[in-house]
Image (cartoon, rainbow, N blue to C red; front, top):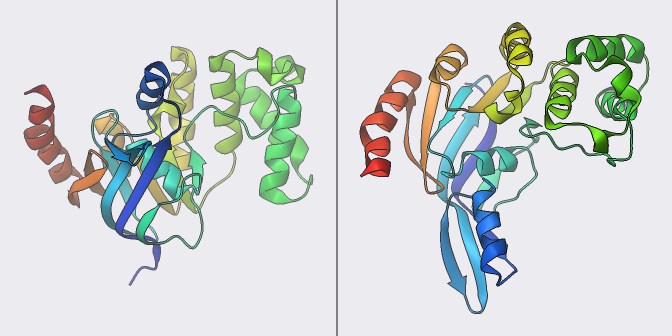
Length: 255
């Protein structure tokens, strides 16, 4: 039997809303972080982003997360990556998944693209051996070249996307959590990235993708789970999961 890489039993994730400002609350809910329901505990307001989650992911799984915006897919990816931790239930996550889920950087925005690339490389290898080849590949693929020496805070979203995509897809990952939003960018970049992404995903050991692209999910995933309000309402073969989503979930959303 394949070894479990993530196990969740009745897992719950509640996120407190610390501000009473309706404007702040609206921004929090629209940020895509949560898809659950509001609950009040005493004087505090909380969002139950994941609610009674039961799921086992085995090594080698190719898993698609299916659901409307705000259903809990991105929240679950962040849990797999160790960015968020369940607040209730039981879970076993021996090793966090490598996240390819947004355009943020774990470095100061005052640093240059070159320095960000160097930090990223050191995190993966603990050495600068081979860094020149890595930097050359990142510069060529991202087409940033001399822009790599400018501060990240001056980068456009498209430049950040190209840099992050190039850095992450240079390495193979045994456990990968991918949000399709990372692929957003200018049309020419998306077209150029298609083959690189295909090779990258094919080389991953265990893959979890949140995407609205059914061709992408069918190409890379064998199993699909459907999220509604932070919970899994269906788990099964990818085509059957997509059929369930269209026949049962989408109709409820538009009712």
